[in-house]
Length: 164
Image (tube, rainbow, N blue to C red; front, side, top):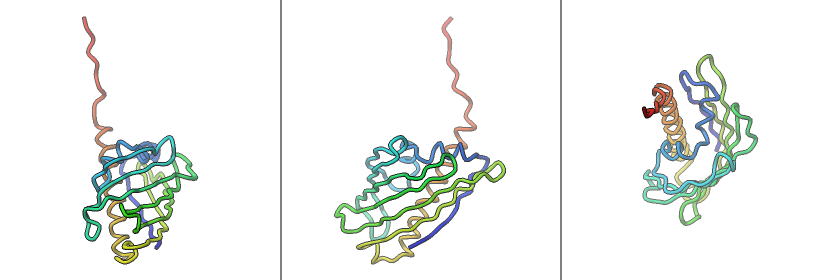
């Protein structure tokens, strides 16, 4: 299954957006499902995320996302190669997605093109349900990161008190 989409980051440069896209501590908070563990990512260019999905036929299951980043060209683009399996490893999504950040005036457009193969129950529920949940996850995560960036940009710098 192939699908693509985009997200508009308002008043943020590609460099600002890039800085949070692979940050494990921010991603853990931004992902739409409860994250149990997260290892790797930024410097290793790969990572493992274990999370619970509380959605439809996937409710109460534990999933593992294995992720590797290739063809990184900061802050313009990268390719993510991934596999998602449930706790039985019988149901799997695998594929890759190309992400591109484009400067659009004072804003940034994040575009993605994904090519995904589904196995087991992921294939049984159909591409439309899987696509809907993936699109929601991407949109939710990017919106949360945008909110964090805009909040951080409006916070006054921390002041330190000096002793007299």
